[in-house]
Length: 435
Image: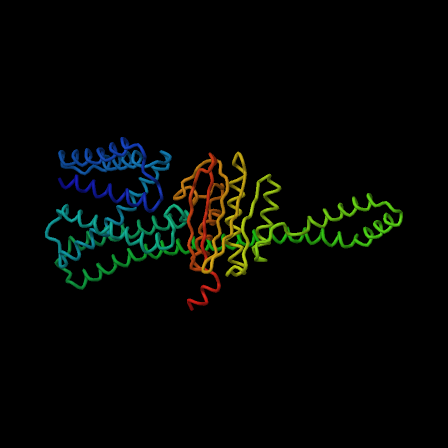
């Protein structure tokens, strides 16, 4: 019976680490999931019947159960299961030693330690849970995001610790009558320190990810700013050229009027008016910073033959700093343009609604297919996933900074798949009243 319990506990730990730590989803086909669980029970029964804990059986059921349970490439799951068997074995060793030192203290009277494995697995699971809650989930980082050098460091570090403690523990076991409680206290503290050092290495890896993420966000912002600056510079250069030639245009008009060529003069005026009209902002939202961003993406939409419509107008400036409004609207509209290009009928609609206490921004765009807002929108489709995919995180962070709310939904409107994001931000006046 103890082998079956061991397998089930190991199985549960694997599922937890892979699902929460690596973001790999279970198979939708329940048949494979059921077979995965049966393999675990069969392996435990086999070991119980023959009273063995064969490493080969352990490896086979572990690999098969993982490959059948999760949706992922077969080779990747094999490598992942092998890595998990190795690393969880190290942590299990630490857990067993901790329990034995605490329970036995002054010495070991028996080498039969089977019954300590169950609490050791539970202790190991608590360690994994603590890592997940305090390091991974807290910072929205996953084990699959950690750089390869840190993974190697964790394996090397764990291996050194395990070899050292195995040697020391065997020595204590054979010579326990020579040592008192003080030696076991030191041994206990050293094991806790070893586990803590693994935490530190993992924390360093996460800090590296967060640093790269911040750099990526800054680069994304600088890229959007540069695009908008280049657009404004292009418009400004064209305007200066137009002004430089304005004297000549007036001279031509004067000559046409002197020669009584009224129709030619009107046509020339229309030409000049059309040239001048190209320099003006097409969309006026009521916020000068928002005007720059929206008109820039209108310019991109026209180039890509995307229908771009803005409805509504603000009567007061939005309560955003320049950096934040660029981050928020730049990411939303950039995502909208990239998605709309792939649609059969590309279109983007921006709605601005102003109330006494809140400003509502609703952006909807056509998409190639209806998406899952809980998963698909949070994962970038770009090949360079490490340096992209910050859009949603930047949007949500900006909304939270200004105590706002957002809601995403994928809808079908008139037979057309649309992605829609709605944002509500308290107005500056509403904030002043609260303060």
